[in-house]
Length: 211
Image 1 (cartoon, rainbow, N blue to C red):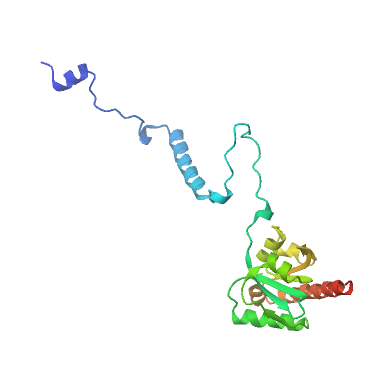
Image 2 (image 1 turned 90 degrees about the horizontal axis):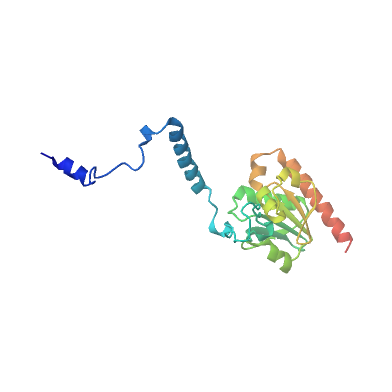
């Protein structure tokens, strides 16, 4: 007498389900390791996906998938709000990160300006340097901080390479030096910062003499 399982088997209804993919324990060791590596790679791929604004457009049918990716043009960087202090005569503008300034940093900045025999006042609110250079064009920019200097000069060079030279931003001379927080933490670098300020003063005097 046929059992229920025999009848189902004769009608090709048994077994009712089959395992579509073998369990990981049944896979060869190399396949298991490759599968795990793929899963890890997918997790990392998700973690480093750039924002939508920086994702390149899909390749067209006429474009080759082997063509190198086009690097983001530094001139396309969005404008950054920065803090500014302008000398009374408008010839020198200090530029630094737009963050709340602790009292100790404010005192240090005031002393730096006094040591340069200048009078200057902090602008009431952070602004875009490019706009200020147009509306209130100074003869010299003194930029404090590596990241701020890199942003304005559109470079990845470290501050050590940017210091000691006169650069140009929007046709205005620019001298880079340490940020105030750094100078309060690394006191010996104050001497190097003074060298930067002296370079700025010399540059400013040269620019004034040519007017």
